[in-house]
Image (cartoon, rainbow, N blue to C red; front, side):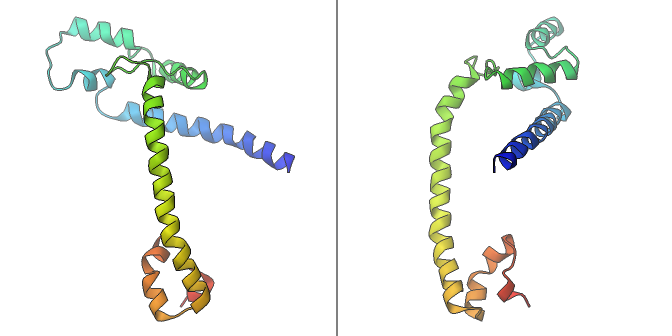
Length: 150
């Protein structure tokens, strides 16, 4: 069991690196940059001010340096400050995590309230047409069970 857990943890490292690289890359492929998002549609800022802001935010560096800096900030659990609110991102996350967990718990409860009765009904009554119709939407999102295959 220990070898299995260690192997899974070691396999998680490249998955996390690859997914972080994909997220970072997608953020850089989008039109504009964080500075344009910050300025919005106003356009009241001159080129010198834009260049200074890009330098302050590190947007003038090559992408690989931006990625390495971003990755280091994520690994060290110091993601920096928000460019929109100028407060530490950790503070924003501390505010958002309880609400997110509450929403996830509510979704889990609602899912269980629906899934358990439907599962019990399907198991006790066998594969009937009425149960198949009731479970149609559920089965369209999940693999079909072996008893209800045509």
